[in-house]
Every structure is written in structure tokens, then in C-alpha cells.
Length: 355
Image 1 (cartoon, rainbow, N blue to C red):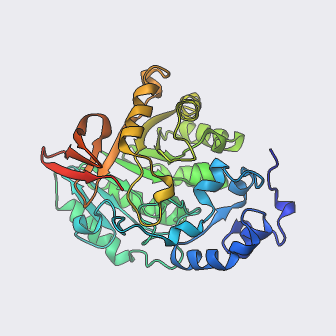
Image 2: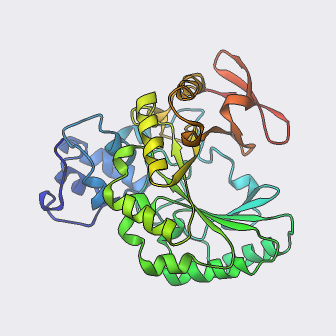
């Protein structure tokens, strides 16, 4: 496989952000530049050089490129696709805070990411031009958490929380650690996989606080697990940070037994427990990644005979409009035509329509 190295990119940016840079790297067709500039105006693009190096520009089906290189199809939203597919807005009592489940909240201290996934369910809200919550917003969110003693876990997400400086991240964790009714903190991030150089000794020191901190890595393909990523995972675990993973089941990337098996086995070898396998959300402009729930369930059922229980994540689907995340194998209780009936965590039944 021919990979793109920094010396082949002219000029040599550390991060590809524009259609022209993508063209110079050989990752798009020259005639697509104008159309992809329009995509970039709507949805942010950023691909670090280390991720670019994993791509094969001669393979139109390259699973790494498919995840991060923009596509003109992103501007072709289907009628039933949603700008807010998991209903964050309806469960956001304050800027930067989402309270969907009784015992935990999502806190989004930043809306910036080091790399932008083309299937992101928050693609309308994250990016270089997004207005991140202010320090006042974060203080208000922490006050909200302090006032509700039934909240036991805070999940830092975004954006990518590791986009924060070490100082800001450490200060935020210290504030949260002072809340007496919190049991643990969780960080959802792509940084150790897509920008492992960011994980320095100083960052690991900033992650140490008075509460257990669990880190959930976003990774979809075993090719992303380079030697540098493996070393980063080892440094995090040696630093006292237990690691989990979450992946998205994506057509053309990993939607087959062999690819998923290799990914999950490799993660376990790195002391990363596969946690969630997400069915793709119904975000606008992401139809090319979606497979049917029936197809996804069949793939996951087949994995049971190929993988030990330790290697298996939970296959989950978010019920649109904010009804929460449910196990795809058990919550989908009835199917007819392109529609499922699903039971949420409260026991209520909702329609899930395939797009």
C-alpha cells in the first residue's frame, strides 16, 4: 500500500484543512475542489498528518480516508435525516451540559476536535467556528451538578476534551473532583488514536485527580492502532487511566465480521476494553455510512461465534429525538417494513424508522 508522507505534501501542513490541501495530498480528485470547498464551509475538515499517513490515495475504498476525507454527498441530506439526531438540544438545561439520564451528565467544555469524522452526529455544532461554552457556562454547569445529588458521573465530551490545554483540563477535573456525590469521571476522546503526540507526561499528570478517570477512545479500524498509538495506550494505563473504546459500525469501513474481530482483538491486546459499537446515527449527509439495523444485528450476532466475551462491546442504537441509547439486540422488539418499535430505558415504546 502506498501511503502519503509529509514529504509528498506540498506545502507540508501538520493538518489538512482545505480542499486544495486534500488535492495536493492526492486524496481527492482535482475536479472536486470547488464542491468540497462548499462542504468545508458547512462541516469542518481537519486531518492530522499522522492520520493522512495511514491512507492509501490509490484506493477509492480506503477505510481510513472514508472516515475523514470529505465527500460531496455530505451536502445531499435526505428528508428524514436530522441536524440533531440524538436530541441533545431537548436535554440541555444549560449551555455545554446535557442531562438525559438521571445519574449522569455530559459536559462539553469545547466544540473543537483535532480531526473531524465525516459521520459525526454533532457535525452541525462542532468545528473551528463553533462557539464553545464560556467559563461562566462551565461554572453554571458545575453548579447544576452540585445541586443534584443523584448525578454520580460526569462524561466530558464535545468536541474533544483533550483539545483543552493541560492547565484548563486539570482545573476542570479538580473542580469536578470536589463534588462529593460524584463517583467517577469519563472522557470521550479520539486524541490518543488520531493525535497521540498530544498525550504527554504533562497531560497524564493533569488527568490525575481525586476521582477515578476513565477514558473512552474512539477508533473504528485496526489500521488506526499504530505502534505510536499502542505506546500511548500503554503510557495512559501505566499512568492509572483505565481505557475503554467506542466504535461506529460504518458501511465501507468496518461493517464485516473480519474487520471488527481484528479491531476488537487488537484493542484487548492493548488493554483497551471494547465498550460500545454504535449503530450509525441519522445525521444529515451521512447516508453513505449507514446500513440497516437488521444488517447490523446480523453482523453482531455472527461476532459471538468469532470473539470471546471479553472482546465484545455492546451494540447500541440511539433512538432519535433524544430517547436515549439502547442495546440494539434487545431493545428492538418488533420490525415491520422499514420501521422498528424500540423500548427505551424508561420502558416506553418508540418508532425507529430506517432511512
